[in-house]
Length: 191
Image (cartoon, rainbow, N blue to C red; front, top):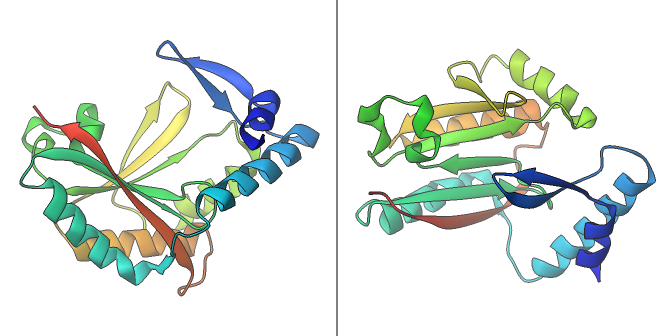
């Protein structure tokens, strides 16, 4: 039932031939969408444990163990509630933004997107741009609209943790001891 309601209040957009649902920006539809998406998320994550950001060290080690030797791309989603706050991805996933020598190498890229069509996120973007700890990144636009920020960290786990922690505290203003959901996805073999 939650999914049906989410589909009814969402805007349908076409991206690369696929129909995707875009959450409403404001008004009653947005409040309905937020309420039912949170209910659906809570139902799906009822028995999933949350961890402090310090647990990211173990998540990165597990990711290296699972994907480095098999030469697979991966994606780590980190979120406090139902929306993904930030991602850690394999460099191949932003291949058009890196030099060829960096593409196929295993490593970590801390990745965040800002969509200016979501009006409530303007303050997040301002905090990101004003953070003194989040300066050395690659910036590019997706579809000439969405701002994408990538911090290429190689296999430096401490750098990944430092950038992710800074983002969570400086931009999202989460407390140091906030607990998060971590999910790791296999995005296929790199040819």
